[in-house]
Length: 82
Image (cartoon, rainbow, N blue to C red; front, side, top):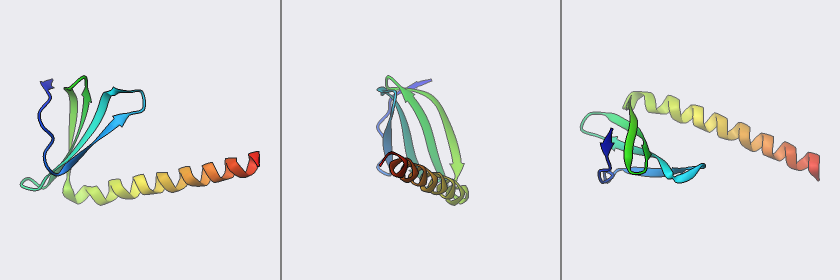
């Protein structure tokens, strides 16, 4: 485990729903054609995953599909309640 380093200019931090002491950092590394997903807790890296840039579209498609389904489920719940 490594201590916190500044986030690269091409990235983002997402806070965990369980609390701000947990986060997901996503950073692009154009020089190596990688996207690095790292899990952080209390400013300490707990683990990382290097995703080849050619695999990013598949991950995006999966997230988009899941989001579409989540919206459909939420709309269905609203219609059942109302």
